[in-house]
Amino acid sequence: MTLLLEATVADRGVDVALEVAAGETVALLGPNGAGKSTVLAVAAGLLRPDTGTVRLDDHELTGGRVVPPHARRTALLAQDPLLFPHLTALDNVAFGPRSAGVRRRAARDSARRWLAEVGAADLAGRRPGELSGGQAQRVAVARALAAEPRLLLLDEPMAALDVAVTPALRQTLRRVLEGRTTVVVTHDVLDALLLADRVVVLDRGRVVEQGPAADVLARPRSPFAARIAGLNLVAGRWSDGAVRSDDGRVVAGTPSGPVLREGDPAVAVFRPRAVSVFRDPPGGSPRTALAVVVTDLEPHGDQVRVRAGDLAADVTAHAAAELDLAPGTPVTFSVKATEVDVYAR
Ligand SMILES: Nc1ncnc2c1ncn2[C@@H]1O[C@H](COP(=O)(O)OP(=O)(O)OP(=O)(O)O)[C@@H](O)[C@H]1O
Image (cartoon, rainbow, N blue to C red; front, side):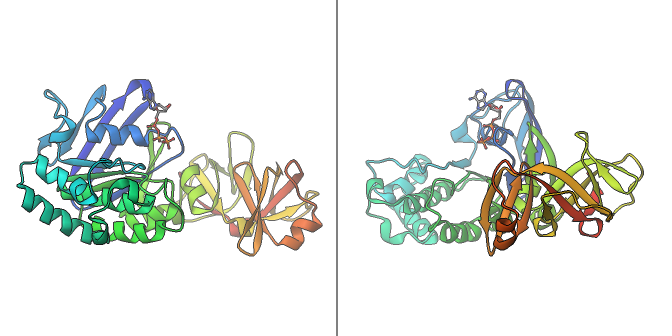
């Protein structure tokens, strides 16, 4: 099934067009309040857009007569598994087919198959109160799939889980999402890389970039995509060998991709490892020097990540100690032009 969604929701500042091809998994990314849950709610039929349409193949889900959520054949899986507490895992999963008129025995057989599919066959007889968070979420995935949805909507399915169980559940999702038309909202770079064919980044209610996950993460154009890819990004206009931002930052770099002309909107992207940190501005070299204030220090592999607002530098622990860095310390972040990738926004 192909999903075509065009929606404006005025009081939430959302104006989005989203297309998901049959069998494709799209990850919806973006900062808090970007409109991700709103888009899912519109797709699920829980929220009526002010204008726009939602179509699954030739089925119009909005427009004249709004198709109610249960009749859309869409399944929405939230952070919280929301299982019926008085039913066993098996009956929770059988609930969808039963509601669709499947006989009890056949519904239970199908529920068993779905539980096995998500690696939860041995949990069939347990009630939700006897399941861990990760187990309950597996059962919820089985329940969503058992309803044979044409469109699967996942709202941060692993956000509420212990980090120890997320890799296994992510592998399960990777397997069961194969070939299903799915939209998954996530903040996690691994979800984007491992689950999604394509990512769509929202910011302030608008799509700001989209493309194959690996491409967007390798060459981000939005601050959010750069952040989850672990890259620094300064957006501005290309002029005289540098990207110049509205707030006065100047980052010299090396353009790649389509030719940039003077004044074109562009981004300068560079790795935290490429950034050197100085107490005093380094003089005389053709380097970019950004005056910043340290906001945070955190361990990062065998390095220390020095954060300064939206920028980051990785230095050795020895260097961090030598520089006597702490939140509030004014420093200069310096990066060579050859380390800075510049391309059109
Ligand atoms: N029930 C609501 N009523 C009115 N406004 C809302 C409601 N829910 C969200 N909003 C507003 O709509 C905008 C989009 O919010 P939404 O929850 O869709 O973003 P999100 O990208 O899912 O954010 P998060 O990552 O924090 O869940 C925000 O400005 C938010 O404050």
